[in-house]
Length: 575
Image (cartoon, rainbow, N blue to C red; front, side, top):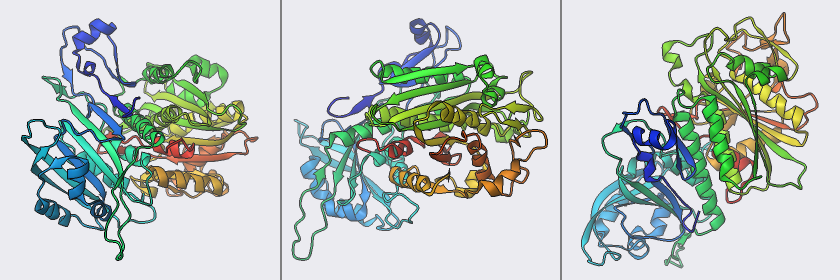
């Protein structure tokens, strides 16, 4: 990764379809420094160019490089920006000379201490690194994070941070972002996660010429403590140079952009086969033996008893898959955490077909699997001293002669039978097989986290910023809440009461149905309890269900939700 912990998107991203076909034999896999994007040529004569990633490179730096920047963005709480002394910082640390004191004052006065906000101006500066001492026109943005925050928000208002970065970083050229952290809270990796969410990594918008480079460097500065009445002099700010923390910043950023790109990719391209290829690419990135990958595919699922996953995916062109990645970061430990992700690469609703307005956007129904894959990748990149199992339940809920039907009875891997009364309640079926696999094959697992864009009712229960969590113990709930609060992948508890809610699934001919009879009775909790019911009876560990249907997407873009949550759960170094 190098001293700057940077990753870049090489020029090959902008090859034409014809060039790609010549190089790759018809199907291209672009590796943006191991963040993979794909394009499929429609014909040998197709020479279109696509926009690709929103950023050419994103790097987290530990020292100041002053060459060739055309924009500077300072972000922090207003009180920390004031303590920083913006005027001195620009001239002495960033070597931007000639910025008017009056302009800085007007820009600072425009920021609200409690609500935050931003102020931008084009300023004429003299950069010391410019040997000709010519004046440059430079965009300067001061951004204040709000301080009027509730207890269920992140203390650094990470959603606002993402919005400010998206709005203030120019669409081309070289920008440096300076994030000013409080003197008493120097955690930077969750902030890196929020910054990465501002840069989507997938686009098939056509362009006549390759997009102009857009390079972003991020530096974290710890604000000095406020001066007292006796001592009005402030010590200089501290640039955060901790290698472990910067490496975690890089890892979480790559994981977030990976997860967001997978959610944004259209289902014609991101099939279950291609999703498995993405997993294999991650395995290949690390030294042999770091990650073990196994798969159960298609008819093998049926033969081995995975009736839920097989039933949901059997009608699709590409077969359903159970993909298992195993990382043993602490071989001496007898404990492990399992991550189980819902990976429905497209959800038509099956034979309970969705309406035309309800089906659009269902490419994001693999958001849980994407978030966990990105989190797993980042955790391995950080050399996390934990044993981690990742189980991805991949399928397309398609329509065809082989599609499963309402009134079918599926035999799950847990041994229980499920009467289907809603083919559009498929996520719980695939996850039921996933958690059953974990509890029957990995006796050392003591924590299971399943993550899914499971129910629309989650948005009603906890909204678009907070996932809903359902946990079988208070300790598990507290741990999940702490992980969400620290990472910025926020969450909030759902009602946990299986003895009161499981009657919603009562069936006359099977052990249970797959959808509730009363949608007004804690529907999101019920869906989670359905998954829980397929844990092995012998399992005594913690179980955390994360329904992130709301926070998985914003403005029709994948957010990368789940990556930071995983890193916080496994206590990745630097995070």
